[in-house]
Image (cartoon, rainbow, N blue to C red; front, top):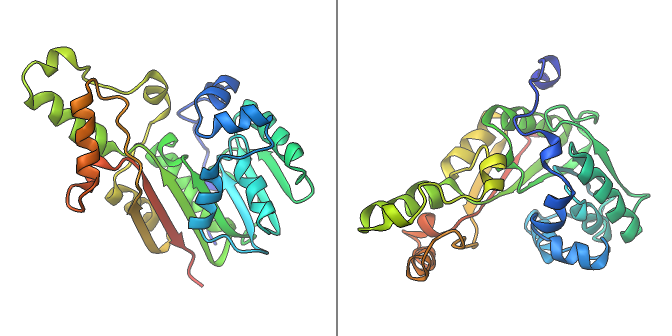
Length: 271
C-alpha cells in the first residue's frame, strides 16, 4: 500500500503534546474519576461499552490511537484480545498508560508506544481493529486524513477503524448560536463562544455526521457508517430552560442532530 504519510515531511502537530498534561488526564479527560480512585486499576465503563460497539472479538489485535491513560488496552486484553498496542504522543499520557497496564497486569499482552498518529511505528496489516476514541476532534483535517491513512495501512484486509467523537460542531454552531441570536437579551448575557478554554485550545476539528463520513471515505475506507450517539451536552448553556431544549431535540429523530452531541463511526479495509 502506498504510504503518503511516511513520505511526507510532517508539520509539527497543531496542538503541542505538552498541552495534554497530567492535570488534563486526571481531572478533565473522560473516565478520570475511576482511574484516579483506583490508581489505574479500574476503567470507566465507557471503554468496555466502546469495545462492545466496535465488536472486538477474542484473538483480535487492537491498535488504539490516542490511547491516553491506556484503559482501552487493558479492557481489550481482559476481553481476550491477542494483543493491544496504544499510540500516544503526550509524555504525560505515556506515563499514565504504563501505570494502567501495570495495575491491570497486562504488560505482557499490551504495550504503549510514543509516536505521532500520522506516522505509526507499526508494520503494514498487523491489526484487526483500530480505535480512535475521542481523538478525531483533536486533529486538524489534514492531521486526521494522514492518521486515517495510517490506520488503514496497519489494518489487515477486512479490518476496521472505529471512532467516537464529541461534541459535534452542530450543538455549538447551530443549536446554541440560534438560541442566542433569536431570543431577546441573550446576545448580551450569553457568550458568543460557550466553549471552555480547554476546548478552544484542543478541539481543532469538531465534526458533523457528513464531515466525518467524508473523511473516512477520503482515506480509502469502505462500508463507512457514521451514526449519532445518545450523549446530550448541555452544561455550557447559560440557563436551565434553554438546557432542557437540547434534551427535547435529542428525543426526536428529525431534530436529533441539533441535540445529540456525539458521533460513532466505522469503516472497513477492502479485502
